[in-house]
Length: 122
Image 1: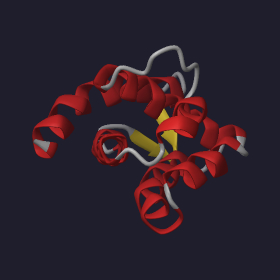
Image 2: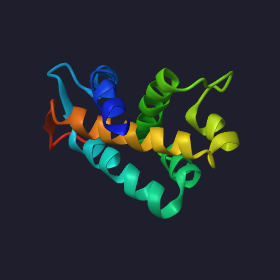
Image 3: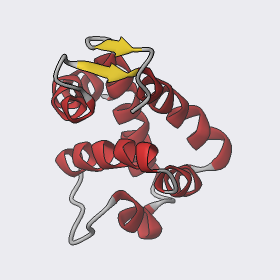
Image 4: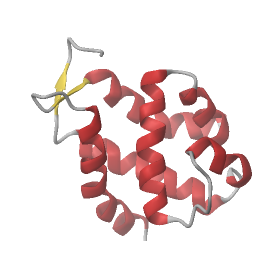
């Protein structure tokens, strides 16, 4: 199931990652690092702590926004307005955690389709 979900999420992740790209369709390399660090951070610090940490930085907050948009396509998120708000009530739900880890993998795979700008960290 997870592999199918990741495969289904990759095109959506590519669309979402467009918001990070500049006019030359390059993404600052730092975003690749933030996406790659999300999964290990969830495993070591926990889902809610990772999301709260990402909320504390403007660049990392963009990753939360992308993950939020993708989560909304996979789960009924009710009237929550952000990933942080949603997870304050659902952070212990194993299905939500698994879905967000799949989203992180899909984004990591999708970011490989973009050229990374090593000099521009926005």
